[in-house]
Image 1 (cartoon, helix red, strand yellow):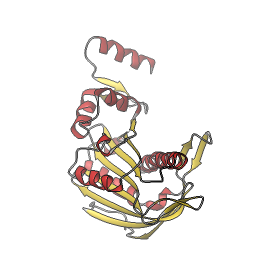
Image 2 (cartoon, helix red, strand yellow; image 1 turned 30 degrees about the vertical axis):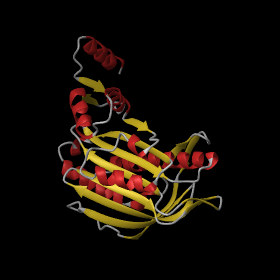
Image 3 (cartoon, one colour; image 1 turned 60 degrees about the horizontal axis):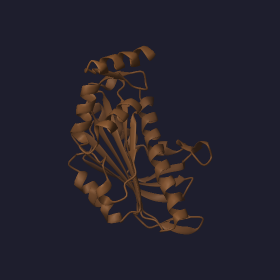
Length: 270
């Protein structure tokens, strides 16, 4: 690994950087990666692109509707922004992840979207997904139960539908056991998953989030060297510093847990 980074340093000094090491011990063409990011994420800076290539993740905490920067430039971008605007949020986080292809999947974007839809609709697999808790200084289970009420998909599938809907009962370690509506939309080269709460959410019997005021988006976009996973969490909660802090941490934890769920599920397919 030291030799790889030394080579990168020497190449950078000569003004040419054809490759860079990624944390999963894969090597990627920097120029292709940079072009892919710019193709779908026009508001991301060059510095953030390098961070994404090196670490596989960048994150941002929007403070206003105009402050969202990672939403990909896809035909549904305006629809996503309109959904966020309706919430009149005071809590928001967005993260962009890069996941390298498995060798078998590199040349088939259609297969990636089929795999992504299979993962994203298999809601029961959320049960037991873990995240790192800063307050507890260790890993914890976030989703303690996940059951599909309606909209179950029959596997295997050969085509990703343009639209699909699932109602699910999900129990997490923050809010408890509630119903959620999950929507899926797909075109030829991306998949969007939208999750929102059907019921009002409470913390210690105190109502803190109204119906459809907790919103999560996952967007899957195939690229040359791997695929991008955009994940955002948005909520409108009480204007109490303590409540906002708790909800903000919960929303962030769920974004990370959703990423862990998706990545682990993808890796398990191969």
